[in-house]
Image (cartoon, rainbow, N blue to C red):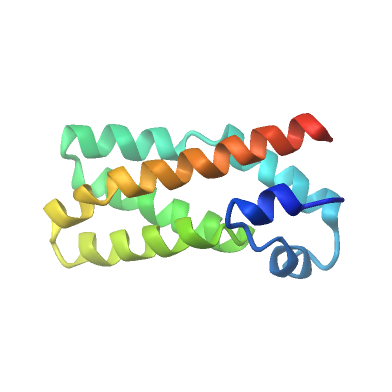
Length: 118
């Protein structure tokens, strides 16, 4: 599979495929699940409602998923956000949503374009 489009969006497909023991089809299946996942919407909702516990749970879940799929910049952002939330720095954590949303949109648009090419 040609992962160039995904690499350009900041996804380290080489390390991810290695993590998936060379199974590109399984990796692609997990990337598709990422597109269909509703956790980001849950994070946005929790932040807009000021529901710290739900926001922390969603951000932590997304951190893990992005780490497993090697979506590097989002992994870094969610990692930072989780640290801030756990330190009760909610305003700072919530302020990250603009950058997180921009990066999430960049990644999901690249994934959609990539799947359209497959």
